[in-house]
Image (cartoon, rainbow, N blue to C red; front, top):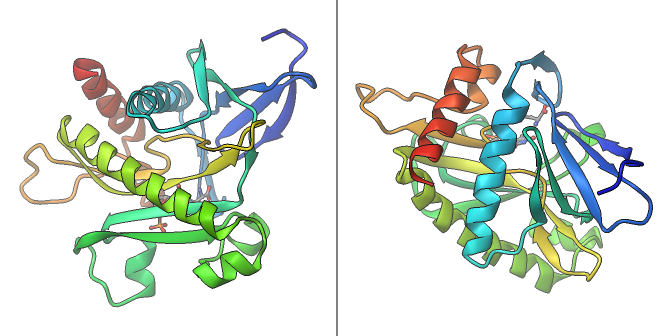
Length: 242
Ligand code: TMP
Ligand code: ASP
């Protein structure tokens, strides 16, 4: 990529750089953390590099298993090169175990393990506070065709199966996660954004006397402390076997 890249988008945890002509972008991870639609904010030195490494490893792993993603190649410790995509404004959340918002909004108890993963779709719109969508509402919004939605659900289901095993191999339980998809310049739908402990819940399976030990952004959401230690632990376990 050449040097006349400009900032084309700044999100809560990432910046996207590109120049006019290219089909590629630089995805730069920030040290900033936000929660509850940025009602809570902080900065953790080193988080950007850790999330970049974890995301890159996961994208490469998924690509090896034939999952289409926007990831192209490494760029720096806190950035990678990706396909330029138009993000589909739907946040796809998969829940294997109940925790977080589902326990606040329903009578389902925290820790309930689902027989089948639960798919929740949210409208990616900060002004509206990312509301929960229904399938009928998604189709009425005219941002995606029904077949595309089916494709995304199937792909996300595959990603879930692959990553449950990926994390279980490093003694982590994949409780839930959020992914986003984009359309590349060929019109293909690819996994975009990131996959890091900012966007998923990971519980330590190493003996913890049956208590939940979160190694993800819940450490910040719920003031548990040691966020960088938790993310570093994930990164170190990944480095040992992947
Ligand atoms: P929730 O329990 O708050 O609905 O979150 C479910 C999963 O989605 C959890 O792993 C965190 C992730 N998530 C995001 O990545 N971004 C968000 O804006 C929200 C609300 C959740
Ligand atoms: N990503 C959202 C925010 O930045 C919410 C969250 O992850 O809890 O506020």
